[in-house]
Length: 605
Image 1: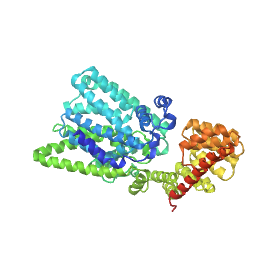
Image 2: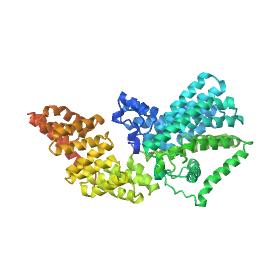
Image 3: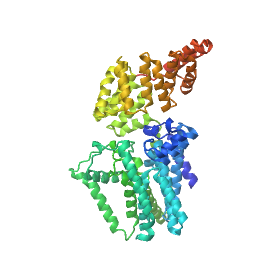
Image 4: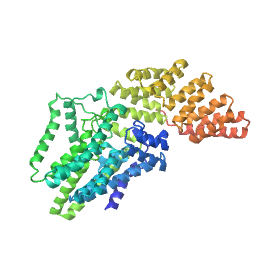
């Protein structure tokens, strides 16, 4: 059965295996400045060095980068293998708990399309890896509960700590264990059941507090968009709980970003969601004498979802109150109940018919997952599919436009930036990106008001200051451009691109010797920065130090061998040194790559 689950999971996620980096994947796949041993130290001891302070997760990414670098296949395979492993571990735990249909539950979890966002998106290795640790901790603790051996308790605690260092939604595990014990025994004993888990509750609370603080201060989950009162948060939680359950029972119209529904405490109908939640919980409480399982599953589902129900600010709430990956851990209880009920009913009716039914359900889910995984193959597929389901998603318009600019299709990006700004007028990021795209199109005068507007909305926006500097340089307003670059470095001295741009501005003013220090700093911040290597080499050439420039030209071409500009500039430097044969070879390479670029350039619409 394990082999079947692994094979079926791999087949279901096949369309995503060669998928490219998406949205914030670049913030999780280890950045150049963190790829050394010193970078690994920063991952553990410098909050803010990574997008979120999950040191074990980012250590895993660090080791994976050592193995296959930026190649995405490895990351996707790891996610699929982690997911399939967790499905099998889930079955083993259910069998230990004597839950009928354990392997059917594992199949539901392994192949359900609501899990596609967690498995097909590299960033969500935080889900797949943390769930593995979560389930290992659960299995070890259940062993401790049966044997009361200290060794089992210590092992379980270590797995739990590892889970917390991967994603803090796992802080809900000790509460989940108490629910399981109540379901088994009908009561909880303070000494036997509660006391051993008190350290777990403390560690979970500590991890949650740290994550909530960093989410607010470093990631930006604060401000007017998050200024919600208790009534609004209750409405979000009530509606979100039914939304998640609905997607598990009927996984239609799954989306990367769901519509951001309006919350209005004055509208009576919105209160139906939390009221019905309370009504169902009350009914399940009264039914507990007949069966505690439905109430236990409801508590597991709601309790595990709690960190994502709106009571704590998390940055994705800026786009939507719900996301498929938020219920990855919480879905387990629902799958267990569904599989158990179907198995018991099938045994009463016809075992053969039940096996046929289970196989058909698995095949249907695998097919749905195969189609859902396909939208994660690249940014164009992802955001096009998102906008089909949610045309008012301003974030998707902005991110699709970024992808178009990166692909050399800046003109096609402009309507998406315009639409994003119609949907959200105070969108500083879209204003900045709009200005960058116009700079790329050689329209600095048109870019200027967008960049100024971005800085009006967000005065400490270093990237906008940098793009403003580029626009001013394009308008031949060099002193103002240099001032903008300088201000950008005051806001964020670690932006390699700004050091490079400031160096170019200084060099263009006839001071290449002064510019060299900025190119050096850019490369210290990003050792793979081909443009900075080329600019450093060019500045050395302009200061009559052509021999010193050669290693930098070589490094620039090693990083970017298809750069016509690098080959041309290198040829001139070699000619100045009397190395004419080599210079001619680079001139030929420049012509070849320039011709190739023109031939493969995408059509402008």
